[in-house]
Amino acid sequence: MAFDSLTEKLQNVFRNLRSKGRLTEDDVKTALREVKMALLEADVNFKVVKSFIKNVQERAVGQDVMNGLNPGQMVIKIVNEELVALMGSETTEIRLEPGKATTVIMMAGLQGAGKTTTTAKLAGKFKLKGKKPLLVACDVYRPAAIQQLQINGEKQGVDVFTMGDKHKPANIAKAALEHAAKNGNNIVILDTAGRLHIDEGMMEELREIKEAVTVHQTILVVDAMTGQDAVNVAKEFNDKIGIDGVIVTKLDGDTRGGAALSIKAVTGCPILYAGMGEKLSDLEQFYPDRMASRILGMGDILTLIEKAEADIDEDKAKEMSQKLRKAQFDFEDYLESMKQMRKMGGLGNILGMLPGIGGMMGKMGKTPDIDSDDAQRKMERMEAIIYSMTVKERRNPDILNPSRKHRIAKGAGVDISEVNKLCKQFEQMKKMMKQMPGMMGGKGGKKGKF
Ligand code: GDP
Image (cartoon, rainbow, N blue to C red):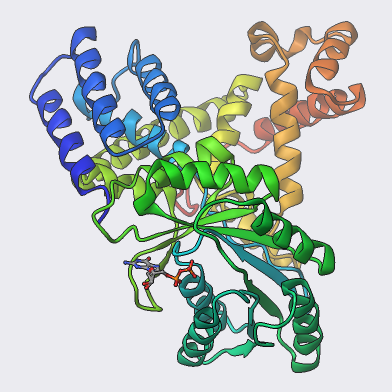
């Protein structure tokens, strides 16, 4: 697949690093110079490469080496994390309208990018999820495109709406929505016309469709084989009509793959799926972390790194529970515990793991399902408040007088009442911890990390 050559080059760089017990700054510099060359050869955007290398270098120098890893592995760990970040960190799902509302998706892209094929592939994915998609042939310039959509739609067992090539795409889209309403189609995917190059006529047509019907998601299809051009095309479409996500096709070939690495950084739009072949089943959800591991091609080392991280979490958790028991807990620990919580899958999970609490909530007729977006948002606001404190204040919450609280509230962009509330909660928590010796990591409980 794409990236084969990049993977091989990166592996060589890291092999040299791993054979060294200790790394000098020069070793890191040389390695990163080679990583830079490898990325450029893979057709990653020059600016993206530059900032990538800068980030890795800054993090690699002066970084403590984790238990269980050697310095070379530390560099791999950092490169891996930065690759994941480059591709957007999180997997992005296509956002569907809530409830029974119909979601309208407009597919856009240059001719030959794989738009019509991808439209049918996507419909298959939605069908598997129990949706009833309708494919709409809005490419009125290529009769073959209409026919291709019909054939592929039939293969996928999904409905296709066509009006031939005599109508305006915007009118076809309107009629398709009426058809969908009558037919119970809850997803409408518009296959629009591409051109060989970006041209104003194509953009205008897409704008007209957007004016005629409410388009909830505009998805751009780009061909990975066109390398940097794919990235430029994405930028242009985003600037001109606004896109919500990108599907990169033909990553199965021997393309150099740089587009997949640059698109998020250059356009800010996430990659949603990757086309991995001509068959209608060859569409994969895009997972930045899995893609990074694939590119690095070092499953074994990455597993080792994960384990080292887990051990560290375990150590930190132990330390934290001791502090909690002694009620020597300060705001720095509070921040750290929130970070750990997120890693461990959120508040609901942790509460379920705490001895006694899961059962208690069950008895109260509540499920420990408080890991809602709301809880998450509250946690983020708390973090913002703590980040606005000086280190001294975090370590000695007792010195927080009204003028300090005012400054903190301003810094975090919240009302002072929220700062007061956090301080109060914090005090209550400390009191509670004192009253419940043994609760955190005490005897008889379910053994968790915390
Ligand atoms: P459109 O002009 O953008 O609608 O492009 P098409 O859907 O007609 O696709 C153009 C060509 O690319 C066809 O031969 C497809 O089979 C091929 N194609 C599309 N997606 C992929 C993919 O992910 N991998 C490979 N290898 N070929 C693809």
